Image 1: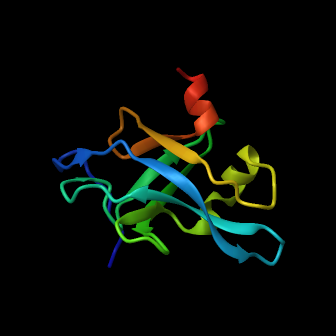
Image 2: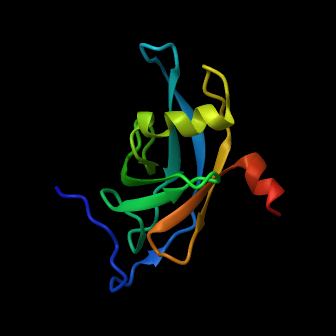
Length: 127
């Protein structure tokens, strides 16, 4: 199936997801413990859904376009992108080779397909 975006004309309601960083209990060839961010799957009428593409904005201004994919080991949960898609983001905020479980927050921007991503500490600091 092809990836899709949520054009402005589609009436699906954008969700305000909150996720968790989770270890996949696997080590990459460079010694980094692989991890993923899991998010409770939005209601069928909400955006985004599996295979939808959306944009994540990081606090430093970097952005990436990711598909929402099925979570690796948990029914009812999805992942924004593949595990490796977040390696650099996780390493910036959690500078260890071991995945540190933490809550991740997503804030919808004025663009219905774009979310800002925050660590739990960043979320607390923004008030």
